Length: 388
Image (cartoon, rainbow, N blue to C red; front, side):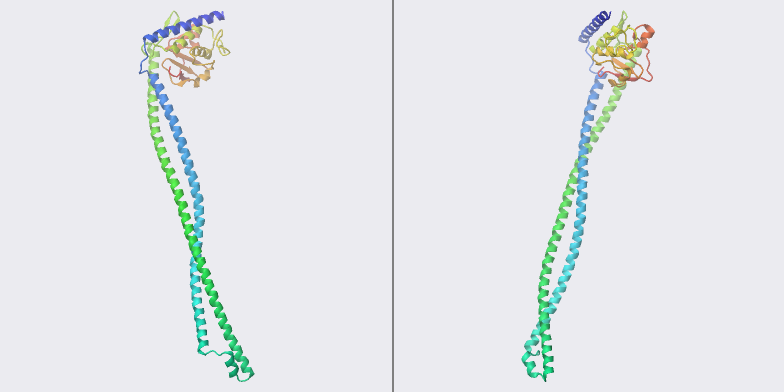
């Protein structure tokens, strides 16, 4: 019995497919097909979204570069603050060194003046020498006092001479230190300016790049908004066409199938996939409802709601294995299709194919899964196969 049914199903599917191929040769699909426009718009939208994602990644990398540059700038600023403190200390030391140098130069002039006065006094005869002290002394005590005075004068001269030499040496050392401080001051200033300019240049370049990238992404996001608006209009148009087709049964609106001798036949111009789904639906349209039927294998003696829909869709390669009703909530693309629309929730699933309802509830009412009109809509997620 199962083998005979399988044979009948194969014959029906092949006959439906042959009829569609002949009809397709006579009736070419319209270029303005709404679903084709939707598919093209979705493709353009996906491409633009991918481009925006790439631009966002580039902006993030640039932002990371800016953050890195800011961290470098903060580090340079810390070094700069330390070097500015060194500059302040160096300049303070420069000022102190210059003041000290002026003081030393004054002391040197005073020492040189005193030394010159002593020398002049010695040569002019105002200062006694040892021989004159001995000859002019009045007694031994006077001699000792005169000699002691002469030694003090000589000691004073030697001290003044030492001070003069020390002052000269200190002036020289201070002048060398002052030159080194001035050189260090210039080097620190150049380093600070160079680092500041380098980081500022990096920040400026990265900021300019980020501005350009954000501007480009803004333009693409505007295009994406326009595409989404167009897509929503096309989807609304497709839904209206499907609703009109289901309501009127007009074969010129969406391509409504016909029912000959109890078996649904695909309309002229229907895609091959639609004919295959209809042929498979015909093969199991009157088989009994069996809970869980069609899930262990597509070949079964009866089918439940999701097993029935899975079987019919599998004939066109639209599903690869039996699915439960809840799985269809995320299957395919959102919204109604031109040829096939699936209505699914966690408890039940049914579909319309070329204007015909394919539903196990319809079978309970009329003995076949095919019916015209009816069906539950509230609480169901609406999906359709891409392009159909």
